[in-house]
Structure formats: structure tokens, C-alpha cells
Length: 236
Length: 236
Image (cartoon, rainbow over all chains, first blue to last red; front, side, top):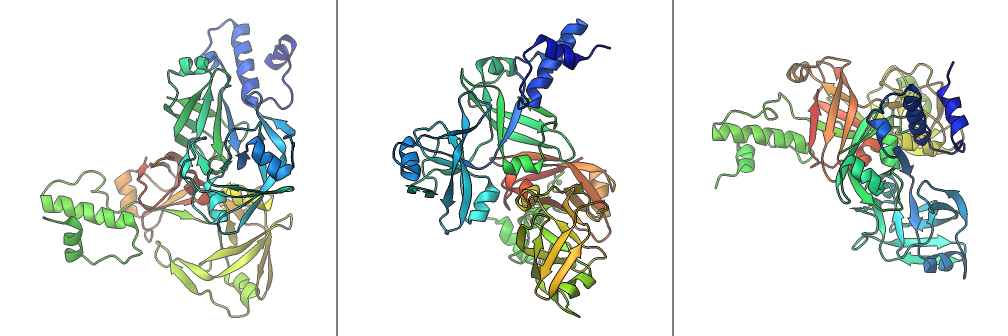
């Protein structure tokens, strides 16, 4: 009997164990329809698979901040590569001290370094720290609260930059063309399963270097108990 | 100039400062249309206002468990009355010790006592405690994990009863008739605002004593940053 997964593995580069299930499914689906000689249904004809990932709280730092926190000349080390090319979770973590002296330890740093310092928390995290944070598109940190970061080599005071990041979808120009949207538009993500939800106001971000990927935070991911096998659909 | 709020206050019992905004708005809306001599639009013609409340993690206890934890003959004290008649947040809180010895302190007890012991957590809470909990309708605790409760007078071991409660809506028979649903059905709650979401699979629970109220947990409430003024709509 014909096994589409075996066929897929024979014909294509076998994905690594860490390949996102959505990517494997997309490729298998395309292989199956090709084998059957049938036209691709709409989902399978998308140029790229839809990957949905939950971003736990994290921060982005400038090289200057990294050196204050971890020592002169320190370079962030790669702990795990992320789905977007070149982006990684660093081995380094730090402690965030909020305005009421409560702390979040083991805050993961994402690399490579950027030209601003920004901490992205879920509202549940902010409530635990005891203060209010605004909902902002990443990078838009004017008039946002700051805080103190503590690393093994020192303290770094952020004047601003603590936000909840707007839910967003990274899209390649091919994806934008397929879905009929443009940068700055808002889309909707339907997430299935036993505690299904729909997330509106999903900000479209477009770049030639982007792979199709939705980023939601832990409040959103836990509200619907998002798992690798949970069905997701991105709608205009 | 005619002020509908003043008119409302003159003609009706003034709600207490703790009255839910949805209740006030519903009454004002009905008063306005009555004053203008116009027929009520659909929302205003609902028999009851739609109240949506976020349930933070909490537990329900038997009188036996209360006495083990707080001392022989101890009765739960009222800290705050809840929207459902007769239900209250107790002054008493306790410590929950999870299976990996991590703890949640200040876990609020809701009264009055019930005939089962049940802890309701959000998934974010369960992840912090380091274990998996199932999604269950309140009261359905067969084959769910247990844990240890610690109070000032002693420990109480729960064999089971730690769950994430299914999102649900309490409905009076009048509400069920108006929305055209029945007990056990699933409805949808649309929540607006800057991080709008829709929650599917909202379980309908019906009782003669119930006031129309949706209960969601902190993951769901924080995913959409639910505030008193956030617009909500309950749909079949």
C-alpha cells in the first residue's frame, strides 16, 4: 500500500525532528495530491505552510546593553535557532526588576542584537510584576514603561521598552499575494480544538526575508491550549 | 437637556458602585428607548444584561476539607459577594502544593461549601506549577490530577479535582429562551477592543437561580485584555 509519508521521505529532504508539524503536513499534502494527479485544494496550494508559534516573554537587546549585562565584548550565544532565518533564542537569560521591585528571572534574550532594547511580556506576566503595560507593535516603544535588567556583569536601566507585542504574522511577499493582503493590514487566526478561539487584529508584517509565521503570546496560546497538532487557519 | 443617566437614577434604584457596568448600561439603554418612545433594538430587548467576568484561579471545598485546613467547626467568611446570588469569595485563602513541590499561595476559596473539592487553574498557572491539567466542565473531576492543600490548621490531600474549567455561561431559563439555546449547547462570545478575540465552545449551563453571566479564566481574559468597558456579544 502506498504510504504518502514514506514517499515524501524518499523524494524529499527529510525534515529534522524539530521541523514544525505544519511544514511537514504541508509538504505531505502537496505530495499526496501530486501522486493522485488531482488539483491542489486551496490550503495545499498556498505557497508556504502556516506556522503558528507562541512567544514566551523575552527581550531584545542592543550590543551595548549585552556588554553592560554580560561583560565587555560579550557576544550572545545561540541556544536554539528560531523559525525565522537568522533569529535565535540565546543561551543568556537575565532578571527583569519591575517598578514595584518584583522580579521575573530567567528572561530569555533573543538574538541577534537590535538597535533598541525591548521586553515583551504577556499581560499575565505584567500583572505578576504588578504594573500596566501597553499593547504595541514591536519597535514602537515611545512613551512605554521601562525597568531594570540585571545580568551577571551588571545592571542596565531601560528608560522604556516594556510592552505587550501586538499579535502579528510574518509574511513573505508570496504569502501577501496569496492571501490578498498588504503590510499593516489586520488578519484573523482561527484556532480549533477543545477550547477553540479566533484572534482578530493580527497585524501583517512583510519582508523579503520572512517565512510565513504567526506569533502569539502565552496568554493567547494558553487561552486555546495551542499544541503542534491544533488546526489553525489564517483569514483575511 | 435630558440626561438619560440622571433620569435613570431618578426613576430606578441606584445601582451600588460595585454594580457591573453591563448591568447599568442595559438598564440605561432600556430607559433611553422607553423615553424616546422607540421600539427596543435586539440587544436592549434581551431579558437580562450580559455580564462577562474573569475567574482567577480558585478552589471549592467541602465543609470537611475546610475544617481540616482551618480548624474544627470553622465556617468560611464572606470577603466579597459574587454576581451569582449566594456565591462569595471567602476571606480564607490557602496554599496549593503541586506534584513537583512548586506552590501557588493565596489561592482564593469560593463559598459556600460544595460536596466536592475542586481547584480551577488557568493553563498558565498549571505550567508555573509544572504539570498538565485537563479541560473539564466544573464538577466532572473523575481521573483528574490531585494535589496537596495547606491551611493554617493542617494539610488536606486532594486525590483528584485539579482542572481547567471549561469556559461557560450561566443562564436563567429566560435567557435560554431569548438566545434559543439549551443546557449543554455551545455558544460563542465575541470580545472587542484592541486585541479582540472570539471564544468558541462556551458551555451553556442553565438553572432557575442563575443570572446571565459568562465565566472565562485569566488566560482568556488577558488574551483579550478584558476590561469593564470592553464590548462583548454572546452568539448562538
